[in-house]
Image 1 (cartoon, rainbow, N blue to C red):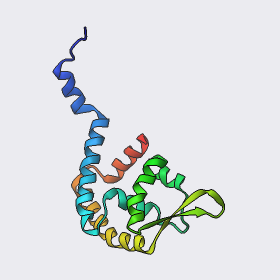
Image 2 (cartoon, one colour; image 1 turned 45 degrees about the vertical axis):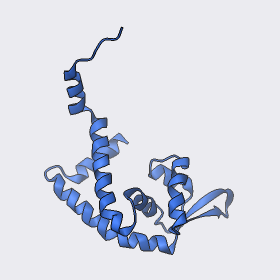
Image 3 (cartoon, rainbow, N blue to C red; image 1 turned 180 degrees about the vertical axis):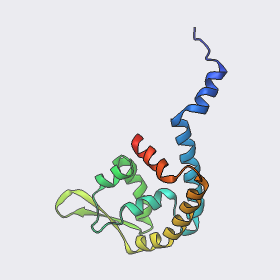
Image 4 (spheres, rainbow, N blue to C red; image 1 turned 90 degrees about the vertical axis):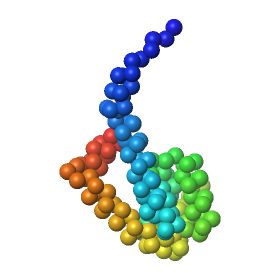
Length: 146
């Protein structure tokens, strides 16, 4: 026979659980950026992925997956629509034929160029909304957790 947990415990978890608060904030932020980036034809996840490929040399999959906190299978799935749209190309690494390099195409660079001012404006609005709780302190706290 199980013991029922009192409702005040439910309220305690609701009010104090960092995981719940971070998940709720992440969903709200994701929706805000998705809505803002929609005119540029990107989701917030696609913007982050494309930006992670904006490097002097095309990166292999592993460091991109690590940066985005994804496993390779999830990254591969996220790349598929970007490949279909011609924003990204996956090439064989000439130095290691078993490895793949992720190439941001000219069309991908153009998509980022369209989306970047939107991202900056949205970010500025979020920073302003945080008011007395500076975004830098929030980023530092989240980085400490990850």
